[in-house]
Length: 267
Image (cartoon, rainbow, N blue to C red; front, top):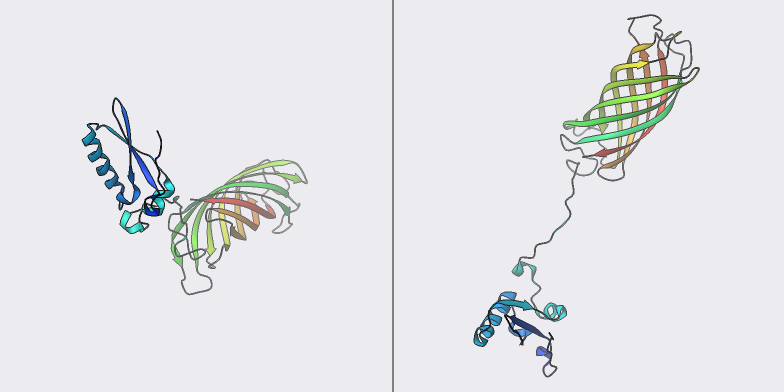
């Protein structure tokens, strides 16, 4: 099957071969300028020629893509060109850093180490290595519009685990709901403050704790950096307190200040 071309006339130098196939293959050519403005004319021209030759089944359009592109109209409106673009999700309400869409969710992983401090009656320094897995959910819309502290409330649930490596080796796990306030800065840097209260279990014992069941209180300050709309790096300073609220003795408590780094995915 060949594409026929002539060079007699510049306007007709580019031709397309139209083939009609039945039990026998028949080929013929039509000048490109006769095919404008649309491929529908190609089909009609082909059918008329095929009818005269008594062959009418399958139409196959062959030819030069360059010839078609040089002669066919380029107005996308007249052809109704459909452009496909990859779908993207937008977590922002009014642009980057201006507020989250209500109901935006996230998952986060954080890890860090902390130094024990002797405050509120604690007798020992409890140094900890910690890791946390959390889920976040954005509540409502931006609060305090027009103020420097405008921001967005977020509910978080965190599963935390870790170990004490000084003065003794012990384990620690906890489950804590948090409330976080994200400050809207209009940039990809979002500072936050965070507070939570939950329950814990630990093998850390006297003289400061009574083993096993403890409540935990947490407070944190940090910043998120949105390297992409849905990928975030974070750094924070966190205070952690463990005690059993007088349910058993001793109950002097554990106090720790730790630094955490993390990564989050928003969806």
